[in-house]
Amino acid sequence: MALSKWALDPTHSGVDFTIKHMMFSKVRGSFKSFDAAIEADPSDLTTASISFSVDLASVNTNNDDRDNHLRSADFFDVENHPKLTFAATKIEKTGDGEYSVTGDLSLHGVTRSETFQVEFEGEGKDPWGNTKAGFHASGTLNRSDYGLTWNAALEAGGFLVGDEVKVEIEIQAVKQA
Image 1: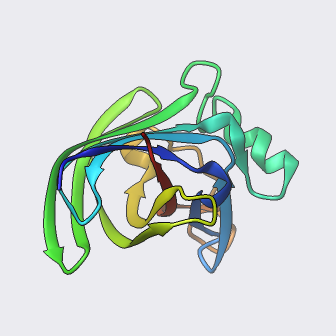
Image 2: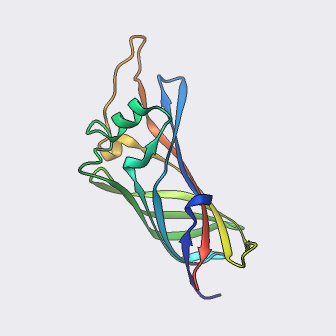
């Protein structure tokens, strides 16, 4: 099958993250504004062109004070670094509908190679005749690798904010004419 262009369906997609808080609990959050450029044959992503961007100011952890702190120079510094971007450089099939997608991830002025596990969830037509495809991606980032090192020591030992950030992405894409 030939490569087709696909547009992100933001109302059926999501970018979520989880990070340890106080070394024993987790804080969950999401980004409300993101986009992707996909040129692919969904049944074989090995030849796909995939890029992704996240508007960091759209962070939402259900706590305004924390969200504003995350937007500040202590963390994302959205005034100087408004976007997280990812561009795939290598896609390997690891199983039936499963891929290892490596690419250049840029965050906070730092670009590093990161790998995400991606699953092709299926393809079909919606009630209006649009062809849609579903994908799930997951991976782990170390925030300190990107200069996001703000923290506070805890009285009992350890730190307030963990270094490991787990990322989960759900994408529904619409095939373009």
